[in-house]
Length: 395
Ligand code: PHB
Image 1: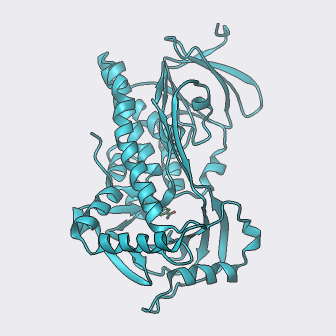
Image 2: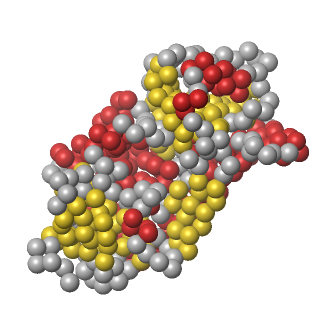
Image 3: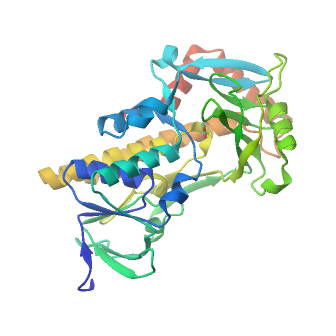
């Protein structure tokens, strides 16, 4: 039984990253009350570098709900990408291929904007609050226990609990007997932030005999780049010179392309995983974002999927509270999973096509080049990639 002192709310949201905050924001706009509990501090999330590509519909969601002032002024619209292989560039123009673009705007900035919007609107977002257990998920009064930033224990009783607590989700682990799908990869990404000029107008995704590299950007003066590495790689073994030499040899080609270099501000190894939990619901617990599914970063889908989940879930919960219609909540898992599996396919396809596993045989290395050649010589092939990269509408 809940303690007499338990707090109550309509929706308890576990996790205050972009997914949890956007959900709370959407619920507030529909007149639904929520409490967001986030174990990390605002500063920790703000300074954790994550991917940076937003689909048009993610930008639209921010715009339509009044969280867009910075994405509009600081976001950098990209009309395509460059697929580079065998030392040659193959530009894909998304605007021409599918009439859509993407926006480079880092995930930590989306977080800052959403946290500011919640604070502005008087939202109840508690940083430094760690959820320790969930209970009564199969009843109409699910509850959770949590510890606040000072270590005091609390209990919260809600109508619904949403687990938006990331890839190591406690909420997901609180449920037994569901189906988990996963696959792992024999490589990771070595990510750097560097003080340098842009090396090219668009992002460059490179397949090379030395492995994958991605040349991304953050601003006119700070750039983000990644190269495929061993999952156990130690960043301490990589000097600036060694990193630049490795990146340069991966993008090198007969066209003489050279990276703009500069001081490296940060180095991290990013794990690579694909994961889906089915269904995304257990009684009164619903999962959203990385808590329910993880994709490798090659397709830049992680944040976009999380925002698509909560757009759907926000609408479904509003229909339930405002119109008394439970059907959209009942349909949430199946509906979200359709997009999630498309993104799983796209992310693992891009990963396989662009990376070289450490034990790859010469045949599979040449086969991947054949695939890239087929893709870039076919308007239909490029259109398919453009359609996936710029995102699918919620169906
Ligand atoms: C990034 O800029 O961090 C980024 C961009 C595209 C990706 C992954 C990461 O596919």
